[in-house]
Length: 133
Image (cartoon, rainbow, N blue to C red):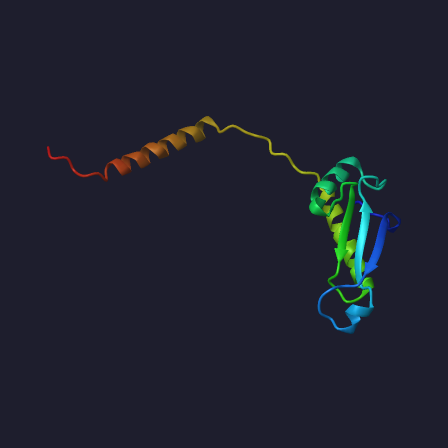
């Protein structure tokens, strides 16, 4: 599990939009967290590549992941929420994908399949109209 040190994270705080009364208009509770994934020394190369793919639209052209947290009413909880969301992405990127090894069907399984097909064909051909012989 890769842990990102807080020294690599950059935070900006701004006012939230939407309903909420005076609290929304006065207090900067929303958090925008920026993490430079492209130049981070705490990420190994394969993890970095998978993280940048996972980030999707949150990744800028400079390789910076931008996460905006506005879920909670306090700045501190939004800050923690943004950190947790980044950590989830890093944890997901840390898991190396398992590759499927292609296999061929055995001779017995091929024969069983063909027998089942011919059996089904016989059943269906027996359903036709009787001939007038």
